[in-house]
Length: 173
Image 1 (cartoon, rainbow, N blue to C red):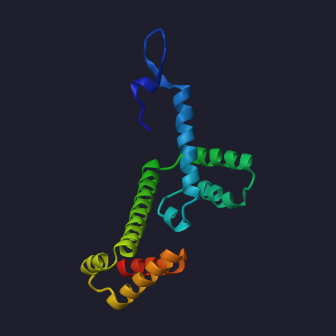
Image 2 (cartoon, one colour):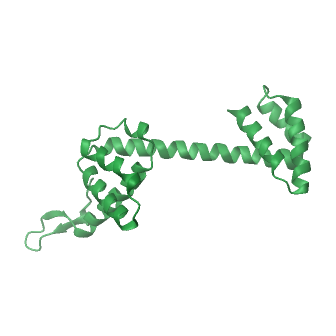
Image 3 (cartoon, rainbow, N blue to C red):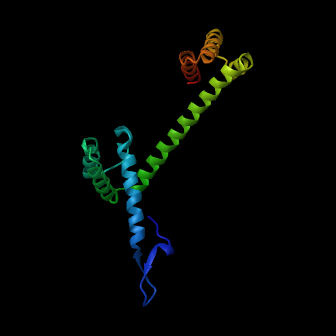
C-alpha cells in the first residue's frame, strides 16, 4: 500500500517520516479484513487463480465451520494478517473482476425487468420493439406469454409474469 504524507507519523526533532500512523495501520487492517470476508464468500475456483500460500488456503477453508460471531471476527483478522504476506495486486484484480461481473449481471437483470414491465403495460407496441431487438425470438409464444402476464397482473397472480421473465431471460441469453 502506498502512503501519503498525511498518513505518515513524523518525529518532532528532524521532521523525518517514521512510517504510517497508528490510525492508518488500523484503517489498512480493516480494509484487509473486509477483503478477507469478500474472498471467503467467493467460489473456490475463482480464488484458485491466485497464488495463495498454504496457510491462507487453510484459513479460507476453515471459514464455513466457524459460526460464532466473535470467533468469525477473529478469523477475519487472522486471514487479514495472512493476506498481508500475499500478492495484493493479484487479489485486487480478482476482486475488481468479480465486482464488475456482478454489476453486469445486475444491469442485465434490471433490463429484463424493464422489458417485462413494458411488455405487460404497453402490449403490442412493446412486443414489436422487442421482436425488432431480438428477431430470433418465438413471436407466437412471446405474444401468448404477454397476454397471460397481462391477465395475471390484473388478477394479482405472479405466475405468468414470472414465466414471461424466464422466457425473456432465455431469449436474450
